[in-house]
Amino acid sequence: MEERDIAGQGQVFTETTFNPIFEDKEVIGVACFARDVTAAKRQQDQLKKAPERYDLVTLATSDAIWDWDLPADTITWNDNVQLIFGYKYLIDDAAHWKEHLHPDDAQNVIDSVEAAIREGRNNWSGEFRFKTGPNEYRYVVARSYIMKNEQGRPIRMIGSMRDIQQRKIQEEEIRKLSLVAS
Image (cartoon, rainbow, N blue to C red; front, side, top):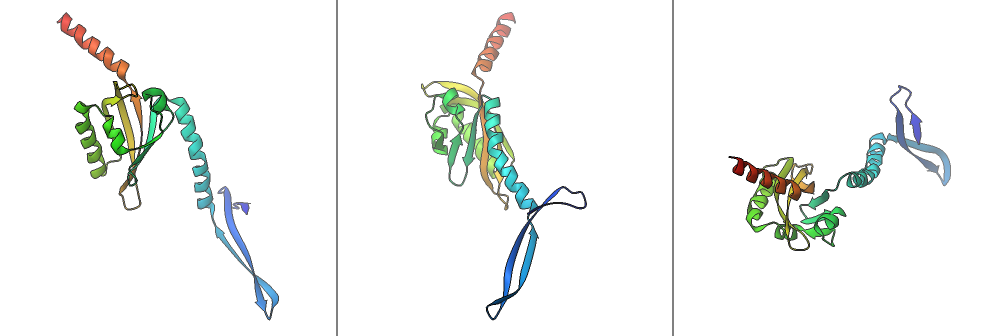
């Protein structure tokens, strides 16, 4: 049942049940119970909008978006992981992700991610080289948000990974030019 709040607070949602009251197999009345379910209804509406927002963000950016379920140790990617890095899958595990880190960057990246989780931080970011499908490495920048459960334990990392290879090439060219100029 949906009602307008008399005090001008907006819509109020209630859940109402009617239960017959019997006496000798005869209905002699009805017990009516109502409870305010407005908060639950609004949360449900927000959850319905979340996938739509996710799809719109995916259209607005060329980043590879990922969602790492920490207890299950699985990473779910959006379609851009196929476009940017040439991978054919959208779900893998963290061990597989770690295998795609450049050997010179891997330990630093892994240590910084683990430190962010262990220290209870809300965010993590890093720049590193990541292997593409054709076995070449590209520079990327990754940023993430670390979600926690009610007890404050990290349960998910949701983030993006952007190819910054062209920027790194330009930075190297500028560095070389400044050496020549000096």
